[in-house]
Length: 155
Image 1 (tube, rainbow, N blue to C red):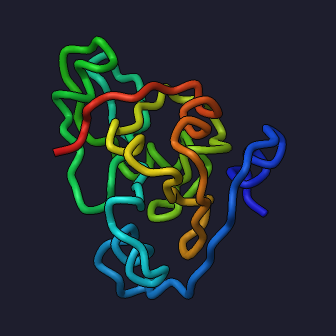
Image 2 (tube, helix red, strand yellow):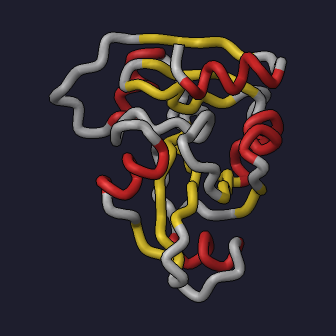
């Protein structure tokens, strides 16, 4: 169990856990998950941390085949600018290691934005809190659990 799985369990939402053997040489954790689980990259989402111009750390959840648009993320959160957070800051704030950061069960609750494309699927996959472990759930449940919002943040 991970804090992310525990959070889903406590909330009583429908979810499924999927695991695979993580390859330490994989260039992209998210694309590796899609490939090893035989999924469309459009349904597998990566969890990224960014820092707003006021130094606030925030979470962005975008499809693994796309990139985070920092300008759109800043706009969605009513900030002037955003930049990618340093990996050490991301790990410290979430309690997870890079490549296994889940949007669920983080050490500190951070504002979360999920790309609107998640709504195109009955369920999506996000990290469950460890490399090689994914949790499948409804995008609306993810937003509810993180107290997040949907916005167009991927390009």
